[in-house]
Structures are given as structure tokens and as C-alpha cells.
Image (cartoon, rainbow, N blue to C red; front, side):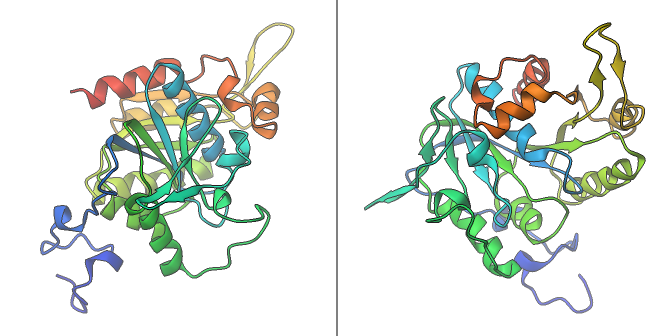
Amino acid sequence: MAENCSHDCSSCGENCPSRDAASLKKAPHPMSDIKKVIAVVSGKGGVGKSMTCALLASVCQNKGNVTAIMDADITGPSIPRMLGVNKRAMGSENGILPVVTDGGIQLISMNVLLENESEPVVWRGSLISGTVLQFWTDIIWTGVDYMFVDMPPGTGDVPLTVFQSLPLDGIIIVTTPQDLVGMIVQKAVNMANMMNVPILGIIENMSYVKCPDCGRKIPVFGESRVDATAMEYSIPAVAKIPVDAALTEAADKGKIETFENGYLTEFFDKIVAQLKK
């Protein structure tokens, strides 16, 4: 136990022997049904984590699974725009209902609760973390096979809250090829290990550009290190997403669900195989 322990595990990141991990988990809404929960994380911002999360959820939904996204990036929510969601979340006497995308993905995000999506959320960390918990405890999630939690970058309050309070089945790390980002990945890996959460896979975004003439893969941000990183940390599933103008345009226009690609299809199958073990 830490020398200055306050006995409040909810705000503490120490790997203390007195911590009872199971006791920290929060129950979802009594009417919710959620089978698997996967957090999508990154050690830093700007790596395309939210777009990757939306793309992964779309692959999951298109394979016939009931899919949900909890957008835990309270101050920088972008998932609704990528999925073409303009409506607001509605409530009932039993609780709050997530919005549903045209493709059937259940979604809750700060932007579907605000009157104006450009309104800034200027809150302190404790209020932000509390809101993320309410997304879990107060929203009625219906028959969800896979829920993806789009995390804010880093290892601060919200990631700690999600790791401690939600029954995570694993995490997926999103990165890019640069050396600096590789160092940041280590922080995400170490946090997952500290919190005893399995690392299901790693996705390298902006991995290369494909030449439109010869098809050669050009590593514009440096040589890929994702395979070596996966081997170093025994991460079982690996995927590489190129710099793709069509994918960027689909995200900008809210058409991620209808973007046809095979970037994450095999990756998702490997994730599912792990979760079924």
C-alpha cells in the first residue's frame, strides 16, 4: 500500500496489493445487455484513433454483429461526425437511449447530447470521468455483441476510470510508424499490464502510401515498426492502414460505414478468435 494512501481506489493508479479490482467495476444500466467490451487506445493524439475505432466498429457491424461505440473522448468527440450522426440522444422513463446510425451501430457521445456540436466542453477531469461512467451506467444498450470504447489519448483520468470501472475484455492500440510514437506505445502497453487488461491487437495507421501507378507501398512516415513492436510485447493481432484519401473523405462526409475496404477484416477475425478462447 502506498505511504499516503487515501483508500480511494477510484482515483488512484497504484498497483496496490489491497486493491480489489472486481469491486471497482461498475454495473451497467439494469436494462443493458453487453457481451464484450473493447477499448481503443493510443498513447498520444493525432494518430487517427477515432477514425480507426469507427472503421473497426463498421467492420464488426457489417459482419452481422450488434455493435456499439461509447465515445469516451468527452472534450474532443468526433465519432458522430464520421458516422454521419446528426440527431440527439433521447430519453425514456427507464433511462437514456443511444442514437443509432444508418448502419445500425448504437452510439453515445458528448456531441449527441449537446445542442450545438461545436460547443466546447470546458470541464475538469473529475466531471469528465463521471460523464464517461454515466455513459456506462445510465445508457440502455440493447443486445450488444461488441462495444468499442473510443478513449481519449494518453494515460490520464478517463483511461484510468475506464480501465478500473468497466469490465474490459481487452484493448486495441492505435499507433503510427514514427520512433516517437513507438515510445508512447510502451506507455499504453505498460498501463494495460498494470491494470491486468489483455492487449488484443495493434493497428498502425498511416503506415504507407500506395503508388497509384505501380502499386508500391511507400513508407512516407518512416519504416513500419508495428510487427517488431507486436513481437516484443507478444501482441497477437496486427493491422496496417495506409494513408488513403478515399478513407479520409469517407470520414469527413460521415460515410465510414459504407466505406468498402479490407484493411481491418482479417484483424477483426483474429480479435474475435481471441475473445472466444
